Image (tube, rainbow, N blue to C red; front, side, top):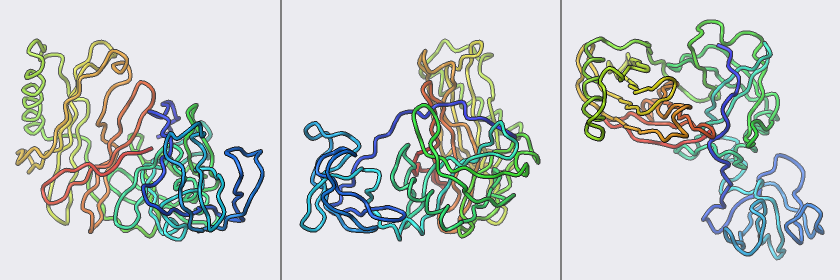
Length: 352
């Protein structure tokens, strides 16, 4: 499947400084200028090294400082540096991080890009904010170190390997993407497939994913969706409720099956409401509904559709099953990770 980027990011997420007292300079090479004022034209009063520890002196929204700059103290020197080079993590820690991204094709046969969703570091996932300095550093580091990324299908099956060739901005509200050379190898096996990328050093187990629900499971979840919607809208015409998408995600090793369904109420091309489910199922039976979300869309949102479009899933022994959802928005979109573990579904992080 070849897809072009036709959504704009949900909001321009301004990077906020860590609450930690000390942060670190994250540059990929050279030295960083410490300036007397928050401007690229201001006098240089010092040079900072990669991984140098700094203390943040300015507070969010303080005085008339630009949101792009932070007042910092490095040793005995005080000045300003761009927030683009500040992180609570050391560069060496970010070098060991695991980047999860959505792979998208472009109009050119051999061209594509990885749009970061989240990164995994120190035992937890962090969301890939629009212009997060960590993402910028990780992409540049991946290029310098020629890291290989595994391209995965909806169930985490490896289908190809790519390297990030360039770090660039995209969209009218800028966000970072890593350009890749697809060489016509991706998007041909299955036109409905969506692919994800993870570094080769991240161990995943393959999940079986089918894009068709069992008819009895579909009926049971459909009736539950009617019940949920009618609790808030007793005037619902049942004929207007349709299954938008349905998937069965099966963990063969653990002999566990999950059905992921999304039902919608539409008027012409506008989506008025939706209900999304994650249910533990056993062939034709719903054992337990682990998660559901009901959304009523605003007039502005309705033409673009709503939240909880299933994009894919991966499994890691330590973390369990991770489900990747896509949320549409009238001013962009965002992706979100959910974790299925020990009979519970919990949100992890959102980004990209």
